[in-house]
Amino acid sequence: MSHFEELKVWQKAVDLAVKVYEITKNDPFNKDFGLRDQMRRSSVSISSNISEGDQLESDKSSIRYLRISKGSTAELYTQAIISNRIGYIDTTDSEYLKTECQTILAMLTNLIKHRKTVQ
Image 1: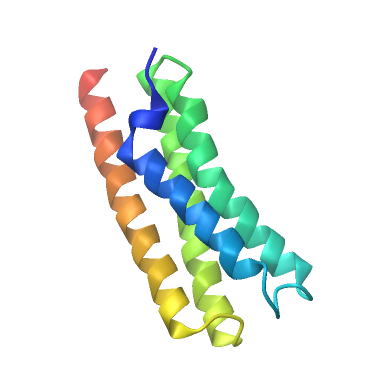
Image 2 (image 1 turned 90 degrees about the vertical axis):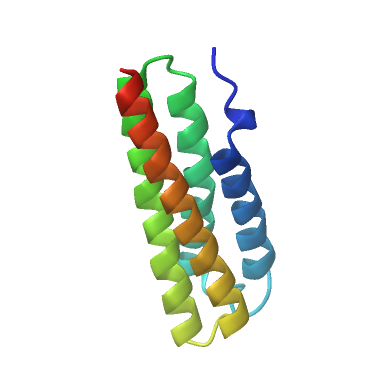
């Protein structure tokens, strides 16, 4: 059985989710439950799908969940842009979230390529 907790991409995704919770606990997110909750859900979904797919013990199934993680990462990237444009987060936080999303997307892409070669 694989140990998803050892995957650097999973670790980065967990750290990113924690950061999203820190950012969204402040105003004006307290008043915008929709965007706040969507950002939290998408950020948590990244690491959750990595771990779920990893535990299925099949590279084909794992790849499916890694792709879902990529989708959640892209969602969060978009939400960071929107949050910045409407003035909910400053450029520093927005750039941090976007950079982390880009890094995680690249890591997921590489992990998918690796898992495809193992099949």
